[in-house]
Image (cartoon, rainbow, N blue to C red; front, side, top):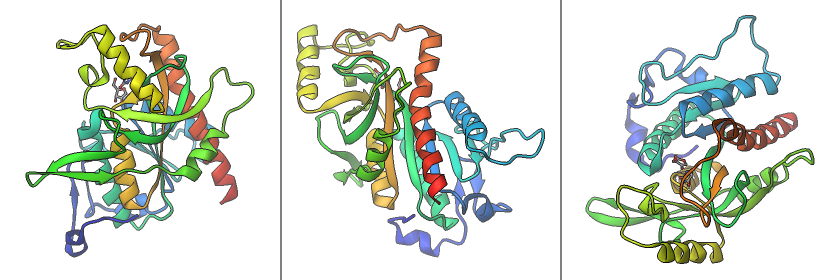
Length: 293
Ligand code: R2B
Ligand code: URA
């Protein structure tokens, strides 16, 4: 895992403010040096569910009475669980929150000399022109102008950060479907917006200055450009992991078809079941990769 920052090489210790961790903590290196996979999800609950499933589905040996422990217990910003070589962390909502946690996790992996690390964002999204419940593996993350890079103001100037996701890892994930699955796994571009409402062409925000025709025309333009879903963090993953030399994939279930509606009205049970779909695909992938190690 690489960092693009020469200042870090001379730094004696580093504090990860939002994780409630520091390199000075006892057992810091041992805790993280064997990590091979980091699975991110937006919410704390989904991260716990993923860790719990990994514990039961990966054949990880555990002492009787073992319980998952939150490594970030010194803060309530993020939660983090370690299951063998897999770390599960939540990233919150949006580019800002996911950028903060990715900066800190990449540094944690760098300081602890972790090698050959893969990262996954296991999330939810709005589908474009595909049935709700479909799992989309992001081929290219694009911004709200459908451009494949992240543009951020740094020192008073707009800087374009290139983005890229792992083609080979995506191919493997695409093959992780099972004939018994009642959902499809498809590749597609993902639009990463800065906002859930106007930024995603929604008509139901507290502010909306366009009409239905304009919304549909934009979604059609995105669809024609290959975009199949919209969410709020894929560009952070595609830029930060690419620059750190980490294979990254973004795999999201779609909760609605945006050509049809803006509101997410499926039942809670259905949402819960759908949220497990991308987890199932990633667990199958990790299991098959661990067998080869
Ligand atoms: C998908 O769902 C969240 C917004 O509801 C956001 O984190 C995202 O990318
Ligand atoms: N997450 C998003 O960002 N957009 C949606 O429409 C659904 C989930």
